[in-house]
Length: 458
Image 1 (tube, one colour):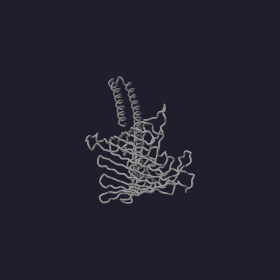
Image 2 (cartoon, rainbow, N blue to C red):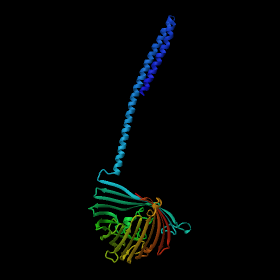
Image 3 (cartoon, one colour):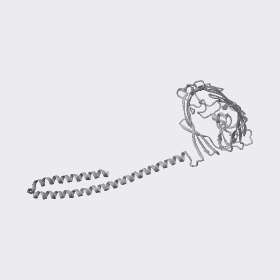
Image 4 (tube, rainbow, N blue to C red):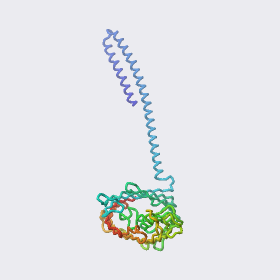
């Protein structure tokens, strides 16, 4: 900017000098005859010079002001750049504070899964509202589910695991804590687990139930969240690990916890944060890998379940009942093949039960649960080198759930189920599933279902 102003000053001076020369030239050409006019013109030149000096002073002042303004603009730019740099540093520090703790011994990871489902049924599902003309809806998108998992590891000593399940239930959102546990690594063969953890009984709940791992869009018959058959979670303490036996590998888990409780709809094997009696639940699983790709396991648990009837003496018949459960499972998983199965047998002694409908509590006879499934899957990559066909997996499963004894409400959903499905794996953790399922109920009409699921694990 200063260079431009200097150029204008030089131009002004050149114009003034040119004007002076132009005025003076005719004067000298006229000779002595024009002497009076020469003095007048010289006077005008002097006036012009004075005006030029004034103009030069103003221009110099403008140049000085412009230089000062330039300095101010530069100072402002420097301040803005410094502020932007400070903001960038602050943002980076804030992000680092969230993503990576300052302690280098702590490592954090965020994982989980997302799933979306669709179902088409040949008959109305239980609990659906009646539509126009008495018909029930048979087709529905069941909404998405988000299951985040938070993992934090401290050195090689401790790992923290927390898993939530956020689901769309109608117009509301349901949130539940699946587990929140601390794993203390005592040595290479022993890990101490405390908090709320998935039940180590069997294999489906602790290893297969996540939406993107389960090869079919639903769980086997009876292996549901609730219903008194399969143990889901426990609040307490667990010791687990693995060790070699010759050429074989064994794994084990032993726990003690608050145990199951009676609810208005029956026995619940979910983990409870408070014990409603002084009798703890004990259980565990022992697994063995005798040959590569083959795993077999046996599980057992024992609990004393308190009655949910509140107006009774603690020594009344049925005030508590023993509950014993046994489980065997296996899996055979060579490349492109996945064959597995599980069987559960459980029995609850007679217990005083209150269904909270207003009726008086009644002594319920002994009840027994028998549940099993057998599942096989084959990835077509084993017989085809085509990239698209290699991502397809054929799945089939048969399962059965049966409750005997107890009350009619517990036996209402006794069923046999046959399912066939086809999975397409875009990646090892992104899968689309389609399955056809036939259900035969003991006390209800049979049902045919088409199920779709998209699931992603991360």
